[in-house]
Length: 168
Image (cartoon, rainbow, N blue to C red; front, side, top):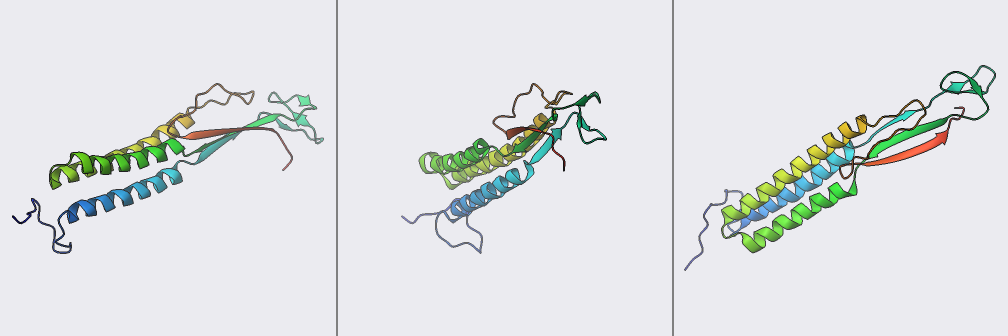
């Protein structure tokens, strides 16, 4: 008995059974790569705060403008991408391919699984960018150059650098 396809491939595809599924897997892989690059590109931001400054005679002043012998501490926060988001994108791709191999009874089932994985990857990348930026914007830096805050784990990675103020 010859095999038949529930959905006929378009004219530019080979007549190989499953060609549409292979095309969708390729699309999923390309989407995962593009969304990883987009996430990595848009998840970079920083902010800093240096209370105090320099006096006219070359010394330092604190946040209240009083002369001090000690250089005020500056704090710099930098948001970057989290490896957990990259891992989640990779796991989503592998889980989708595994589910297609184990559970898809028809080509339509396989396409549905792959489409859901693609939607998950897109939503994950965009949500991670938005959540990490909002969370980063809400991190307070008070007058003393410190603040109590939670990192936007697992959506972004924040590095904290505290150093004395320097000329230049």
